[in-house]
Image 1 (spheres, rainbow, N blue to C red):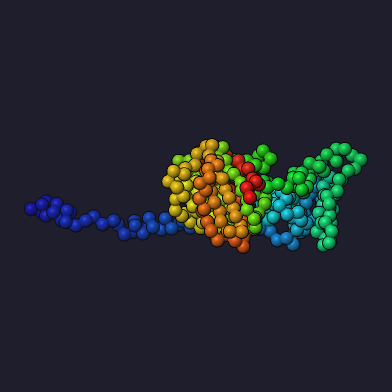
Image 2 (image 1 turned 90 degrees about the vertical axis):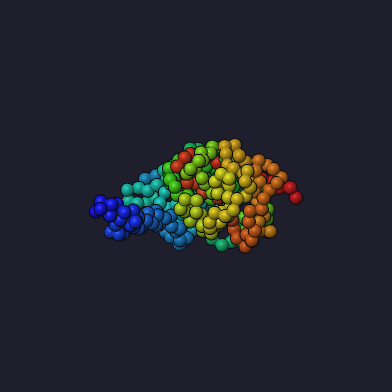
Amino acid sequence: FELWYFLLKSIAEPVMPDQDQTDMGLDRSWAALDRDRAAFEEEKARFTSGEMSDILTVNIGGEKIIQVLRRTLCTVPDSALAAQFSGRWDHCLQRDAEGRIFWDHSPAAVLPIITYLRACSIPSPEPLELPSFAGKDELINLEVRRLVNYWGLSSQSRSTRWEVAADGFWRVTENMAVVQTTHQSSMNRMVLATSGYSSGRHAWDIIIERYEGKGHGYNVIGVAEASVPAMTPDNCPGTKFWGVYTDSPMHKIHGQTLGLIKADWRPKTGLVMNFFLDMDKGTLSLALNNSIDAQVLFHGLQDKTLYPTLGIGALKPNVYRAIFDKPLAE
């Protein structure tokens, strides 16, 4: 009888989990969440923006130490030099043992350029043309020309391209047109183009030269304001970004993942994404493979300055090529 009693009792009464063990499991989960959040905040703090009034100390080739205002280095808008010293990438800049910014260039080549930038920052009714910097030393002349072009200080070298700064999570190659992921991370690093648009109509292509999806291969592609965080959680670029999340199929994303664009729009190697930004109408549109069937993704984008943007963050390699400043039919 006692045996049957205990058998029936065990069937009638559900086995309840030990409350202490449940509480311990919840505590461990919250602790893990707190650690992840603290790690995210610590990493995000590295991507702070500097002030234009900052005084930067620069070691030029180990031969000359100078101090220069950040705003002086950012005098030429849309230049690679201005992007590099915008404050977003201070943690990536090479430094010497004393913590000073280090440029591995000749002072004789760098100082005339700094002088030119300081002159440009002085208010004047007439524009200051870029001088020839021609001196007697041909090697120094060559270095000056290379620096002017590399830093994007001449009008010929300031066509739209991806910003040059990188922190090990991506590499920009081939005349600043190709972005390649180089680091395994579930965080998105936001790569902006050097030109922002506040009026007019603009078009550019993003060509997927290599795509590794099927989990952790997803990125976000579209436009963003300059104040978009340089680092964001996995595929969560925030409210300063408008574009697509390269899930399969692709989704619209702004602040959070929104609806499907089209059920058969799926990212793959070789896909050409045609972006159209009309700042006068405030619309961002997308077509695939040069189709005339463009889909309007977003409205209400007026009164902003928006930059073509990639959100790079994947545990598999991806390669994107940009063709900027495409002509538009009237």
